[in-house]
Image (cartoon, rainbow, N blue to C red; front, side, top):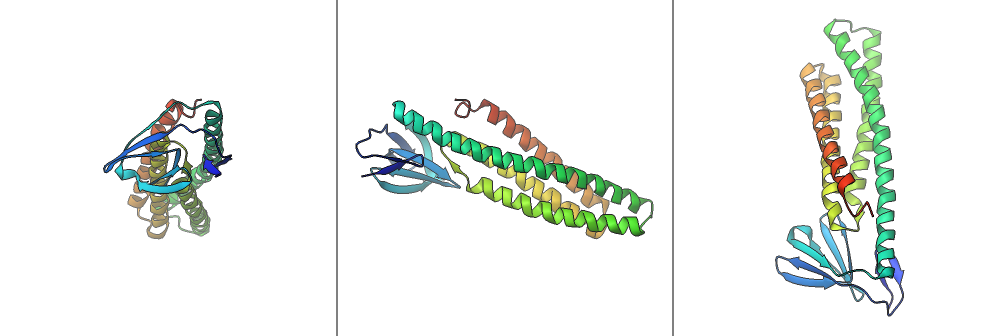
Length: 217
């Protein structure tokens, strides 16, 4: 029987190290595992099962042989490629948002000064279109992080913190959109605060990313 370990086809007769997964209901064994959203997928002798991450208490595994270690590295490499793509996309969106935030500041100045002529109207229209675009792309980016396949349980916290980061950015964008509609400076203050909160999540993410031994292999 051909089975799949870390997304790679393995010929019959290949020897696997065994993972022992402790759950609220006892212990189960698996030849390999991966995580998507809130489910832990287990594959053992060709049989695929899944359990909720909330039910999992620990995962223990024996030492890999050379072939298994190579498969694990390939799975981590694929994850690293996805990680880079997601992070590069985020950087580009943040550059667009930064310029748009400057434009929102200009709109706020014009509003305070009572200068609500053509410049004010054009700026509002341009900022609104940019915010629609940024919100759509950040929502897609957030879904990409939520759907990413994690080859190791230590990566769950990284994913979850990044999702919180992107959720804060969505709130930042929506507050900005409300500001354009209402002209209420309080909405802009909320937008700035959610942007600050997203930065805190990103600092935490970067710290954990640099310290993760799995990705440093």
